[in-house]
Image (spheres, each protein chain N blue to C red):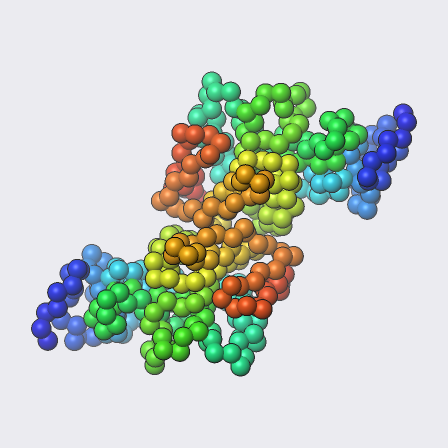
Amino acid sequence: MSKKTVPYPVLDEIDEPVRQFNELDASLTYSYANYLNWLFPERVELIAGKIFKMSPAPSRVHQGVSINLLNPIINFLKGKPCKVYAAPFDVRFPKESKADKDVFTVLQPDICVICDKNKLDARGCIGAPDLVVEILSPGNTKMELLHKYRVYEEFGVKEYWIVSQSDQNILIYTLNDIGKFQPSKIFTLSEKITSSVLPGFELILDDVFDDID
Amino acid sequence: MSKKTVPYPVLDEIDEPVRRFNELDASLTYSYANYLNWLFPERVELIAGRIFKMSPAPSSFHQLITGKIYRRLGNFLEKQLCKVFISPFDVRFPKESKADKSIFTVLQPDIFVVCDRNKIDARGCVGAPDLVVEVLSPGNTKMELLHKYRVYEEFGVKEYWVVSQSNQNILIYTLNDIGKFQPSKIFTLSEKITSSVLPGFELALDDVFEDM
């Protein structure tokens, strides 16, 4: 395989599977092609080729909130073209080309909704979902609010929901006309949210945070 | 004392001190005049005359974070006109009159800054502070984000900072030209916030949440 000129240093050899997370070098830049060769159990995400290790397993409360969010979305999307997926589910964010070797950002949103079927393939989603939901966990705040925030904004995710299980609230970033996220107020118990991506959808926050302890 | 006509039902007799929280009736509307007669140890807040019991005592995380933000603001405001205060300290939100009997909203923000010295008297602050900081605790989310949010917006608090200890982030609401709160993005570790109320002030979030 001939060496491709990319704006990043990329490993030349990607044929050998990597069986131990520790064999990765955090100072290197990896592509989705590399990522596909990683056979270790740890879950990782890539942003601009850098490795971000995910927390071992989400808490029970995190998963409870996730289910409470998923159910109404699944029900709402029945018979509609948009599809909803829950983590673990790879979303690739390609820049110039969609070739595995040219994709350097791969994330696993907690929940994502994709309305363009052309973005879906056997391995996940390629391109920005219409809606992404991330549930904050202790320790992942910077990842969700800084690193992923920038990716979702840059690649044009139309709506990004930030859900706090501990503070029982939700904030919605909506992409505006010039491609910048506009924050909503913070919604909390007794309030409802709607979505510009899913017209007619309504989520009652009391239901999301009900019975999760 | 003649009965005053107010848009709320108000207790007629406010002379007797109330020594037990349980003697209050949650269905009644109370004024700051009533509140001054409450001698029980529980801390309460009033919004439009309704009683909101405060959580028994804040957690150590809550106090560490509150202390850090208070110290930064205090250092910045040394020898300045604006003054910073820390809870417990009453802020009265008067509507028509500043008379005790006519004030139905009394809150204790975790931290607030007042730049108009006329708003400060011996018993606290009367009128909207310029800046309010609330640190979320488990169980008080609805109070801070819904009830107090509405009061601060309605009475014209210029900036309202919402601090999450568990998620290590801060969001700033800024009052716009038409008196509505505009949210900032959520700021988190490695970021800094500034304040339109305190030009030149900068707060690094790493400093606020270190050692937690």
